[in-house]
Image (cartoon, rainbow, N blue to C red):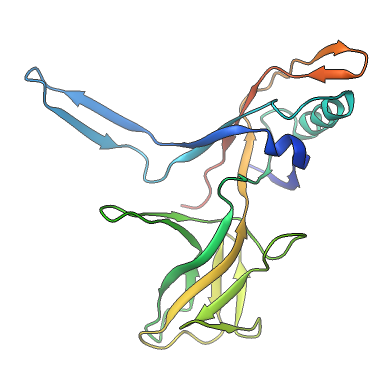
Length: 206
């Protein structure tokens, strides 16, 4: 799917209600024993747009955006304002040979922490931290590394054995409208709204 490098207007984006959705099969035996199977290795973000639409201008912005994406046909970038920062995220440990490290976001837990690949890091942006890569806690310059498609940090010289690679910054999520139908309501002359309509994350990578 084509992912356009645009985002919903910020006020509308901040008004999205959503979060991660896993896919799990649950089986209960005749004896009442429950077993589960995690069908997806990684969840997909699901959300609903509409809460942030308050005025005629908001409504027009959403309409323009929806038309330009051709409904479900073209994706766009979305920022989950509850979860968009990378803070001292560990990407891996050098061995003197590996020169590519996938950017990840780790959700810490004492029993089963979850590591999520990040495919759309933000190199820089207004009000956002600039993407910074460090080795053993020391920030390294852009002459040392480059950002590749899919959220890969590529080093010109592989980190040495035992060196820990970390990153700080922010990220977006590739999504698309999960409907081809947009219904709008003009409640008053200058007050418009849209019934909630869904957005869904686009799976990237292998």
